[in-house]
Image 1 (cartoon, helix red, strand yellow):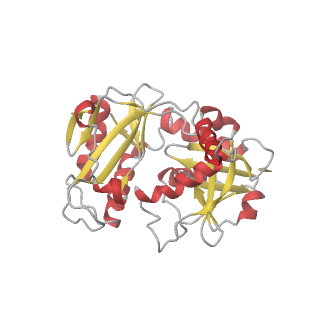
Image 2 (cartoon, rainbow, N blue to C red):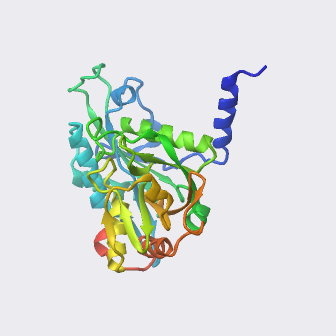
Image 3 (cartoon, rainbow, N blue to C red):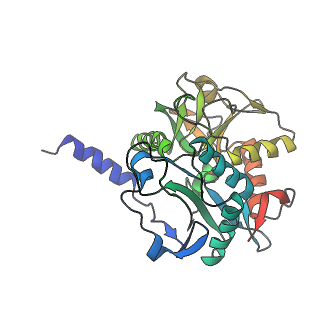
Length: 327
């Protein structure tokens, strides 16, 4: 007889097949210095963030563009958000925002990467234990690795299937929705795991009142009758930088963009749905809860915005030079 838990363990194992290990660089940036991964990549088991989840991070992409140059996309905005996340939980990094921004350039050069995902990470180090540790050191790291399409290369064209999660996004008075904070992501991990075990590609979370919030790591947009709608910043969502980018591009294309609360039935009845995020980039959603979205293929508005986005980040579109930091 096989124990009930064995089936769940096997299901989880099956869902991890095909996931590659992180190809991280040989160096990391830590508190203003480039150090070797081999000697600095370990963390004390008494690191406060490991126990209590207080920490902040960012996800940033560097792309090799159409003329061969490497640029970091919207670096300033990402670093500003990192320091705003720190401010929310009263973390005071020992380095400045300018140092972290420069560190992102330095670590790409040190690791000889012309394309990469960058992960600035601010942690509370070893010292006092317990939930109140005001004097523990605050460490800032930047890790780099190669990361292709977050939800799969095929997903960018063919789209993904999603499930509205049984887990709700944090209430706005329970956590800091506008912070990209370490401990808060257990909410996303549980939602993603549930969706994958149920045979879907990604989760969509609602807030505690039932309004659509976002994916496990992406902002969400719906298209209906040629108008784009996305939940407002007053909702329980992260203020996504790719979200703001796509809203700008849509308005430049003459498309009406509304920031309004989205109901579950509006999600089901949308003509198009797509996710945005630094990792997910622009990913179409073709099915939600076994309901086909639109024609069940990537919609025309999604396709056009996706093409414009990729031409800006990795092509030759020079219409927004302020979004690029050269390496």
